[in-house]
Image (cartoon, rainbow, N blue to C red; front, side, top):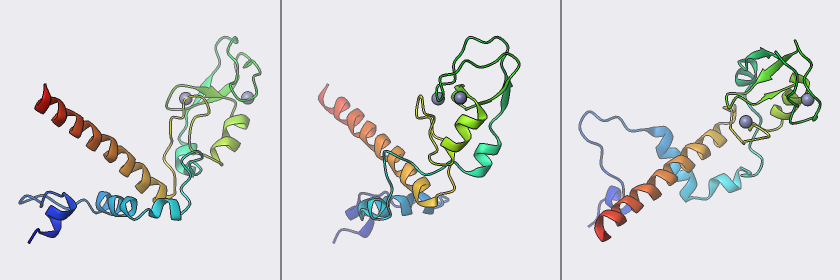
Length: 145
Ligand SMILES: [Zn+2]
Ligand SMILES: [Zn+2]
Protein backbone atom coordinates (compact mmCIF):
# COMPACT_ATOMS: atom_id res chain seq x y z
CA UNK A 1 0.00 0.00 0.00
CA UNK A 2 1.31 3.43 -0.92
CA UNK A 3 2.31 5.52 2.03
CA UNK A 4 0.76 8.86 2.73
CA UNK A 5 3.91 10.59 1.53
CA UNK A 6 4.03 8.71 -1.76
CA UNK A 7 0.39 9.36 -2.40
CA UNK A 8 0.89 13.09 -1.93
CA UNK A 9 4.07 13.04 -4.03
CA UNK A 10 6.09 14.18 -1.05
CA UNK A 11 9.55 13.12 -0.12
CA UNK A 12 9.77 11.74 3.38
CA UNK A 13 12.05 13.90 5.51
CA UNK A 14 15.70 12.95 5.58
CA UNK A 15 17.40 12.51 8.88
CA UNK A 16 18.17 15.84 10.49
CA UNK A 17 15.72 17.66 8.22
CA UNK A 18 13.05 19.69 9.93
CA UNK A 19 9.56 19.78 8.47
CA UNK A 20 8.58 23.14 7.07
CA UNK A 21 5.18 23.62 8.64
CA UNK A 22 4.63 26.90 6.89
CA UNK A 23 4.98 25.44 3.40
CA UNK A 24 3.16 22.29 4.40
CA UNK A 25 0.18 24.35 5.50
CA UNK A 26 0.36 26.48 2.37
CA UNK A 27 0.27 23.37 0.20
CA UNK A 28 -2.70 21.94 2.06
CA UNK A 29 -4.62 25.18 1.78
CA UNK A 30 -3.93 25.34 -1.94
CA UNK A 31 -5.10 21.76 -2.46
CA UNK A 32 -8.30 22.44 -0.58
CA UNK A 33 -9.03 25.69 -2.42
CA UNK A 34 -9.00 27.44 0.89
CA UNK A 35 -7.35 30.57 -0.43
CA UNK A 36 -10.34 31.33 -2.60
CA UNK A 37 -12.70 30.62 0.25
CA UNK A 38 -10.77 32.93 2.50
CA UNK A 39 -11.16 35.69 -0.02
CA UNK A 40 -7.64 35.95 -1.37
CA UNK A 41 -7.97 38.19 -4.37
CA UNK A 42 -5.19 37.77 -6.91
CA UNK A 43 -5.89 41.15 -8.42
CA UNK A 44 -5.84 43.10 -5.19
CA UNK A 45 -3.47 41.79 -2.55
CA UNK A 46 -4.06 42.94 1.04
CA UNK A 47 -2.49 46.11 2.52
CA UNK A 48 1.25 46.36 3.18
CA UNK A 49 2.17 45.80 6.82
CA UNK A 50 2.66 48.89 8.96
CA UNK A 51 6.28 47.85 9.55
CA UNK A 52 6.95 47.54 5.83
CA UNK A 53 5.44 50.96 5.19
CA UNK A 54 7.38 52.52 8.06
CA UNK A 55 10.65 51.13 6.74
CA UNK A 56 10.32 52.71 3.28
CA UNK A 57 13.21 55.16 2.96
CA UNK A 58 12.75 58.86 2.28
CA UNK A 59 14.78 60.17 -0.61
CA UNK A 60 15.32 63.81 -1.51
CA UNK A 61 14.62 64.93 -5.05
CA UNK A 62 17.86 66.34 -6.46
CA UNK A 63 16.61 67.56 -9.77
CA UNK A 64 13.00 67.90 -10.67
CA UNK A 65 12.02 66.26 -13.94
CA UNK A 66 10.44 63.11 -12.69
CA UNK A 67 6.71 62.73 -12.21
CA UNK A 68 4.91 61.01 -9.39
CA UNK A 69 3.29 58.01 -11.11
CA UNK A 70 0.15 58.39 -9.01
CA UNK A 71 -0.75 62.09 -9.25
CA UNK A 72 1.39 62.77 -12.34
CA UNK A 73 2.78 65.99 -10.83
CA UNK A 74 6.51 66.67 -11.13
CA UNK A 75 8.40 66.33 -7.88
CA UNK A 76 9.74 69.64 -6.52
CA UNK A 77 13.49 69.84 -6.05
CA UNK A 78 14.46 69.24 -2.44
CA UNK A 79 11.22 67.40 -1.69
CA UNK A 80 11.32 64.22 0.41
CA UNK A 81 9.60 61.35 -1.29
CA UNK A 82 9.09 57.66 -0.51
CA UNK A 83 11.17 55.08 -2.31
CA UNK A 84 9.84 51.56 -2.76
CA UNK A 85 12.28 48.60 -2.75
CA UNK A 86 11.78 48.47 -6.54
CA UNK A 87 13.29 52.01 -6.66
CA UNK A 88 10.07 53.63 -7.81
CA UNK A 89 9.43 56.91 -5.99
CA UNK A 90 6.16 58.55 -4.99
CA UNK A 91 4.86 61.44 -2.89
CA UNK A 92 4.23 60.04 0.56
CA UNK A 93 0.71 61.46 0.45
CA UNK A 94 0.17 59.49 -2.76
CA UNK A 95 1.75 56.13 -1.94
CA UNK A 96 0.71 55.83 1.72
CA UNK A 97 -3.05 55.71 1.07
CA UNK A 98 -2.35 53.25 -1.77
CA UNK A 99 -0.33 50.91 0.45
CA UNK A 100 -3.06 50.99 3.07
CA UNK A 101 -5.25 49.28 0.45
CA UNK A 102 -2.84 46.94 -1.30
CA UNK A 103 0.79 45.92 -0.88
CA UNK A 104 2.07 46.23 -4.43
CA UNK A 105 3.86 48.99 -6.30
CA UNK A 106 1.36 50.70 -8.65
CA UNK A 107 3.94 50.65 -11.44
CA UNK A 108 5.60 47.27 -11.34
CA UNK A 109 3.52 45.30 -8.79
CA UNK A 110 6.53 44.70 -6.57
CA UNK A 111 4.96 43.38 -3.35
CA UNK A 112 5.75 44.56 0.16
CA UNK A 113 5.20 42.14 3.06
CA UNK A 114 1.70 42.15 4.52
CA UNK A 115 0.27 41.45 7.97
CA UNK A 116 -2.10 38.98 6.40
CA UNK A 117 -0.97 35.43 7.27
CA UNK A 118 -3.32 33.84 4.81
CA UNK A 119 -1.94 35.94 1.99
CA UNK A 120 1.66 35.22 2.97
CA UNK A 121 0.84 31.49 2.81
CA UNK A 122 -0.76 32.01 -0.55
CA UNK A 123 2.33 33.79 -1.86
CA UNK A 124 4.65 31.05 -0.58
CA UNK A 125 2.54 28.44 -2.35
CA UNK A 126 2.56 30.42 -5.61
CA UNK A 127 6.36 30.53 -5.51
CA UNK A 128 6.53 26.81 -4.84
CA UNK A 129 4.08 26.04 -7.61
CA UNK A 130 6.30 27.95 -10.03
CA UNK A 131 9.36 26.06 -8.83
CA UNK A 132 7.54 22.76 -9.26
CA UNK A 133 6.68 23.77 -12.82
CA UNK A 134 10.30 24.57 -13.50
CA UNK A 135 11.41 21.25 -12.03
CA UNK A 136 8.95 19.39 -14.23
CA UNK A 137 10.13 21.32 -17.25
CA UNK A 138 13.76 20.51 -16.50
CA UNK A 139 12.87 16.89 -15.98
CA UNK A 140 10.95 16.85 -19.24
CA UNK A 141 13.84 18.49 -21.08
CA UNK A 142 16.38 16.09 -19.69
CA UNK A 143 14.22 13.12 -20.68
CA UNK A 144 13.31 14.20 -24.16
CA UNK A 145 16.28 16.11 -25.46
ZN1 LIG B 1 1.98 62.18 -6.12
ZN1 LIG C 1 7.81 49.58 -8.58
